[in-house]
Amino acid sequence: MNISAGGSDAREKITSELKNVIREAEDLLKGNSRQAESTLQSAKDRIEANLNTMRKGLGQAQESIMQRSRDAAEKTDDYVQNHAWQAVGVGALAGLVLGLLMGRR
Image (tube, rainbow, N blue to C red; front, side, top):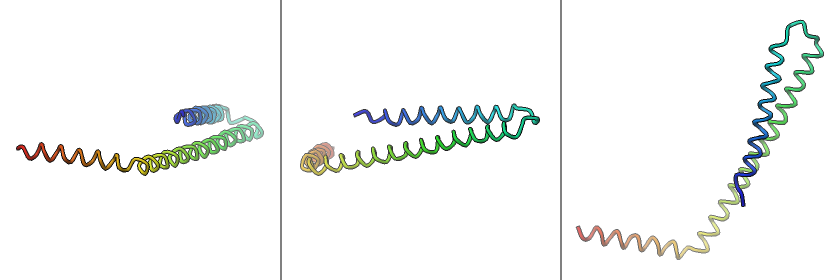
């Protein structure tokens, strides 16, 4: 399972949309003040559409990250429950080794 693939796609899409918003804003600022009202409204509409797309992408990316976090926590919980005695054994062995090493001093 490739965990970073979904996040990478979302990141690329959001980056692209952000560049579009910046480009539209720069075009709007570079335009002279004699532009028609419809041209300004059109630019405003395009910027709003790009911002809405970015918001949607961020929401989807957030949901994806939340789901992957829940899945990872669930898998960790399952592993610990299924291998509890192995974890206890490793801890006991580590304690024994440390105790022996400290006892020799």
